[in-house]
Amino acid sequence: MSATTRLRDPGVAPPSTPSASPGTPEPGPPAGRPRRRQGGGWLRRLSTVLIVAGTLLLADAGLTVAWQEPVSAVYAWLTQDELADELSRLEALGPSADELAALAALEGDRRRIAFLARALERRAGQGEAVGRLALPSIDQDLVVVEGSDTEALRKGPGIYDDTRVPGVGGTSAIAGHRTTYGAPFNEIDELEKGDRVSVTMPYARFDYVVEGTKIVAPTAVEVIDDVGYDRLVLSACHPLYSAAQRIVVFAKLQRLTPRGAALRDG
Image (cartoon, rainbow, N blue to C red; front, side, top):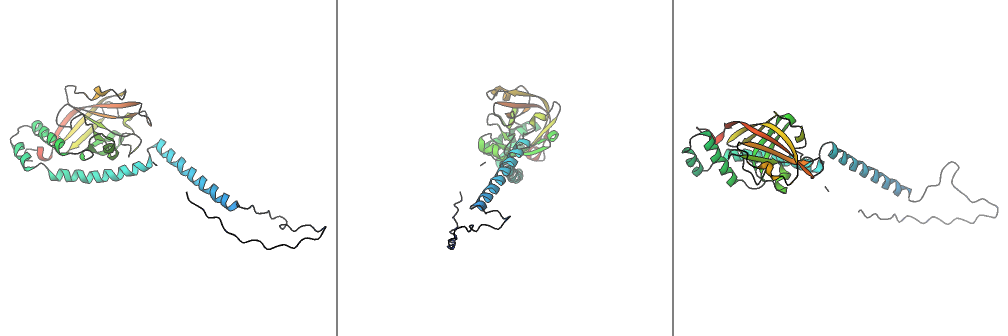
């Protein structure tokens, strides 16, 4: 989020005025016309600048409180467009020749999807597009990136470095901002039990159902542990405008649909 030097007007010296004779009142401004204060123009301009600056600051604060920080929001929107193009290129590229040969020997959707998920993990770098997250109940459809460091999360929701991408098995976790950089998880607290969540990767679509929400300390890393079934964890800072806690949403996998190279006719 983020001085102009002003030159004084040189002016012209006023003409000399003859001395008034004794008893003669000194000339003054015409009646009804106030004497102009020297420097009044500068004061008016300065006050106008301060009023405009204050109005802009209040508007910025109002937008942040009501919704999200506007400068980083614009950055995130532009970045999401770029990520959508990047994701399209990733899907068009598909697996390598060696990966396709190995894939041909695998039977069953689960095995093929897991193979492709691990291949994507090896290929994707921090901050690169890997899939798409849909949260229909809060009207969000977002490109997800690999990684959860500062730079990655400025682009959009990111898959935790400590968890696997969907398809490998176990817990997959995605972190996102609530008030800056597009605020993708601004309304994450409105997700309720039974709400639908989907993650679409180049090799499969994963449909989840929300199980519940918890507020935890930032050190509660156990929330991303494996629990014996495939699930998705979404997390963000809590409350709004604070990093004192984390809000965590848990969703259980309900349906797995292969796509792309995971299809048998891949």
